[in-house]
Length: 172
Ligand SMILES: Cc1cc2nc3c(=O)[nH]c(=O)nc-3n(C[C@H](O)[C@H](O)[C@H](O)COP(=O)(O)O)c2cc1C
Image (cartoon, rainbow, N blue to C red; front, top):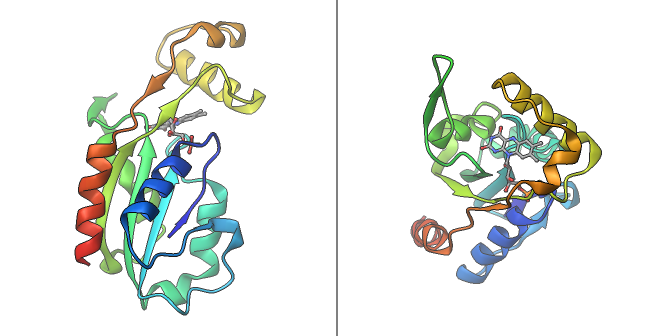
């Protein structure tokens, strides 16, 4: 399994998955040197502004040819686990899977899941604070960076949902 995380929630999920599977090797995306020894590659990334983390995109690019020969399972960790319509566009939920699917050989994807993570406005770095302030301003809400620490933490980690994903992974 290959994953990366910025604030830790994808790492929690990666740990749950590794505890629930036998015979699995777990690596951060930037640490992977070869995928030759594996028949199934599980790829997990958080969603940041409708994109995977850069290290995940780099992993996919680096092993582009090898991935065409593997079974691939994906999970996206995000805040918008429910689908919604926003300005005439379908967003969230299964649409968040596209952040990985558009970079991967689709025919090789045998399993996919959307899992909730943790969005903690109190611990964001400068860059992410700016991205969130911009996001709010796009949806017509004006907030300042300084206001972020007063926003509640959204914790959507769900072990039951993750366990269902693990059961399906074990059947591959
Ligand atoms: C700057 C920023 C942008 C985000 N963009 C999205 C997004 O486009 N869609 C979404 O569903 N969640 C979004 N999120 C929520 C994250 O995907 C969620 O907090 C995730 O659990 C973070 O994973 P990590 O803790 O492993 O880094 C965003 C969070 C931040 C801080």
